[in-house]
Image (cartoon, rainbow over all chains, first blue to last red):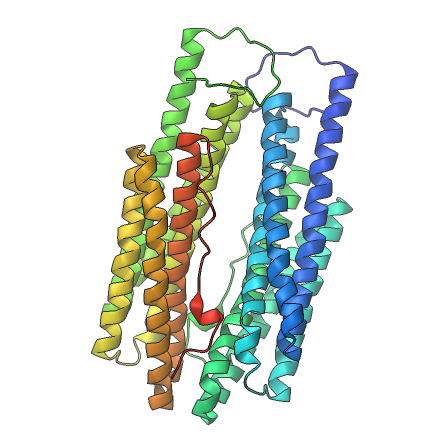
Length: 249
Length: 249
């Protein structure tokens, strides 16, 4: 199991089959936690956007509560990973897998935070009636994000490095969609000042979805590194085009 | 240096003074990197807000370039930390220090990202003239954030756990200021639709400053844990009040 440790000085250690099997068990538990966190992240993203589009305060509240579960799972994963490093002293690619899990858990926890932030805005946005076209645009953006969240979990579980590389590049579609939602929101605000409060909250919701996409990208890059031991070529620039130029309005 | 390892099963290892000294040297290098990243974060936050308030595109561009240095330093720290764990197999509080450094570096890198995002909006916002009152409010918020960034670096270097605990609670002042800037921006947008584009960018800038405050809070909590081995009581809720209720406008 322990891979090439060319980069590390280390003494040979006497390690029985039993110890190695236990390391694998520990690592499998950590992978299980990542997978659970991934499922929860997907539920939270899907729940928060549904709550937003249907002004469903009960569902929004559930997403807010789910975030506490997410945080607890991240702490559990961190504790297990640190204990594993201390107890088993893994080398090279075993160590990479453990450190990669810590990082992936960090990104999943951030996705939960962002979904919670969307959920917390449901009460405020719900006060106004969202125009149908706008709902449709936000829904379309949310669907793209959900596909990415689901995909990264599945492809990490399937250990499919090339699918992860491909998925990373799909984030661009979310960025393009975000830019168009941003422009649409500005138009609504300009049309009628009474839309401004609700639209600024929707702006943050759209930005949060765009950032969830960025965290999926990070997870894909980390998962790729864990699986292959090499970094994906040339970090895809995380574009928020709206930050660079004033959208035409 | 190696502390009580009550929570970890481990075999006694033969460890000469030389080895221990090298561990301390390795750890000192990591601490130096954290301190460098902290200085850079402070420069980036200060540069990006100055650039925003003075429409200084050259300074904004420097902040954007600095982010690449920040990213490189984080990668270097991660590599060193992982190599250190693999090579030295630290136990208990040594391990805590290394893992804590990885986490702090993650938050510092995020602060750099957020400063870069503010810098990238300078060109867009600069097209319009920012009202003096609004500049003053954003400047006041930026000053609070800078004090926090500077403070957390200094108090971590000084190993002052009680100052870190106190600093964590100061984040509330940033949140309060953010809520007031948010309301002010909505007012400007409602007054004149021509302000909307610039004000939405300023809204994101203010939100980024508020989030920089949250990352400072994370760093303070992590630094406290590294220094004391115990968690700060009851996670202070990270309040973005604007997400919970519609500001009066």
